[in-house]
Image (cartoon, rainbow, N blue to C red):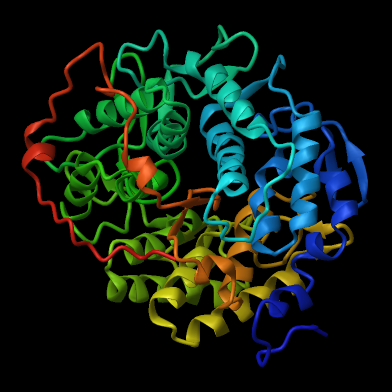
Length: 484
């Protein structure tokens, strides 16, 4: 018996379904989120982070990752409490090995977003500044970014190592392989940080990695592969597509252009998008031959990106495909075989991509169909994922068995986009300023400050000459960018 109904409208729709218990019982959740331990959702007790994975980082991952979610929900007092908890308890001076990509999008991005929202003179959420705030979140972000920089050292291509130890740098046993998305999706967070502190180092290393990957694309097809050797520049995985390992590389080409106005970024995006459309299946990067017959759930982000690029009709069609899979299983299986019409990988870790695209399509079209899609997703999550102390990853989308974990992106993205879908009066929708979301769902303004550099050259040590295609490729300054 669900508390939510299809007649519900407004932000209370998401709240009444129980999906945002963080809003109703914030004090309990802040205690849980600020712990350095992992929490068992099924049994409601703390457990050690050791040997779970290197995303957790031995810091309060979910507390940091969900800071701006509290503001989106309108809970300013709990946002202030959470910010103070982060300032008082979080340190990155740890003997902890982390994934560079995950630390960037979940932690660095959230610290930057929360700092900007605290100090934004336009006050989209009202005057939420703290009287005694002294840029501590920005200092934490800078400290973390400095600790990630060793990943870019001692690599002959400029493509970073996938992992670093926050205290000692790149581990001696590090592999020389990384995925395209992991190495090429740092530009938004690193670029904003460089502009906020007036230091080009961070944007320069991130942009160098993007350019290095771009130069390694196939001469025959223009496609990039999935996994590359950072020392030799040889492709380890020649699979090209829009899913895991590649997704946010393309996302950040477009979003970096929207934020920074660098024409090079849009030229690369357009050259990728127009090369052989529609490329929604996995192919060999060198000859374009289909390599397998599955797609993964991460690809459901792409309709939202199409909306940002003004291709709304294409976005509507592609979104319908992923929603049809959701309707069948009440979730998106991690991999779905489009030839066999069956899941290949059966788990669903509460990913946000379909919700994100649904939200952006509703903003673009105001078609109430997308409200029904959102309600369907809410009801599925309530029925299939809700457990005693939260919402759990589905181990199997058919039998609905569960795993005892809830990824931080469930609160930072999935819940945020669901809430915003039903909240037409949210300050993000009413503000005169325009906003965009990072790949982890963190709110950042489209601000003219970010189009201004406080340095003469992003790469003072070398002259970067764009290749023939990026310098002469198609470019238009009047793209129909979807802003909020």
